[in-house]
Image (cartoon, rainbow, N blue to C red; front, side, top):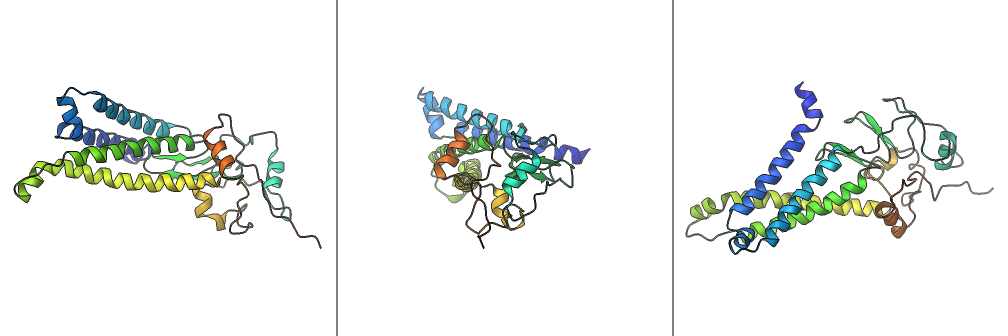
Length: 267
């Protein structure tokens, strides 16, 4: 029973939510810029910060509980049959074979991968994120990036607010006593800010070249990529088109479509 509670992600989500609101309360209770605004009757900035925190929490739960794009049946998206899709994604010199997952026994579409944590295959699998206790895949990847953007804005604002509340004291002992909780919040917010910056930067780079974290890290083990040259990405349409498809196209994008593939040199 305990294992099921952990697997469900309940404890992770509760811990994230509690930590978020504890830090928010600390920032409002100490003599920070938010508290000073409240005392002066200027409620706009405190209200905006509070709403930003609420938005980040709502986005967190949306991404955490959203279907990342689980493969439900053997039916492949689009008009192509599985054999036609495989022929399009495998170099012409290779034999077309339909891959079947060895765990859930479903036909695996191109760019899909079985997640051992979720125990299901995910379309355009990027990675399994322990922070949200969910996979990041075709359906929630865009929302994951939006969440990171909102979270980063919230963290940077929180960092500024925490710094504004550091109060001077006559001795180090008094200084730590006065600022102890604020310093703890400052450390936590600072660490999370660095993590989110690194995550967001790496994801934006991979999106710009239409590559997933799994494909980038395991390129040498993926059948449709290991035959490509080191710098070749068969899904790359150029930075502008890649970003447009990811952020601006509302309909389902055929992420499996190949734009470059190896061909045999004529003899």
